Amino acid sequence: DGNDLVVQAELPGVKREDIVVELDDDVLIIRGSKSEAKEVKQEHYHRMERSSGTFQRRIPLPVKPEPEAVKATFRDGILELRLPKPAPQPPTAKKIAVQ
Image (cartoon, rainbow, N blue to C red; front, side, top):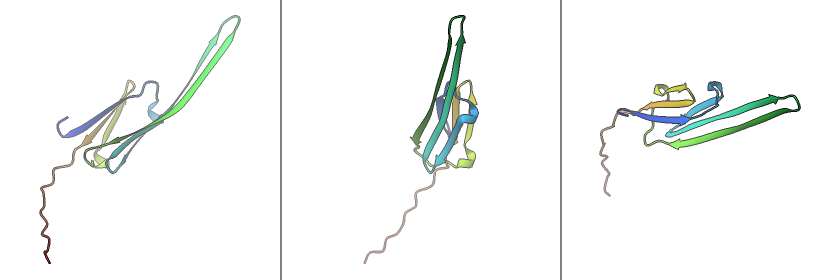
């Protein structure tokens, strides 16, 4: 998206405090955990189900963004990360001595 790399991840049922986002050079790491409990009480039975799990995704990036410039938002189960692309560096020619 213009000057930003944009990553969106759908994380339904995951709480904001259970999400960890890290940047390791040019690899974006998203990990977290999810747990829920359902309880049904009826006249003749009582049922309780619990489920939990963890997840992790490692996404290689085409550029190495500055970690301080990354912006993350989490709304309605969607995690959106905006990673500004670094300014293009002009190519530099290096002279090699011939012996």
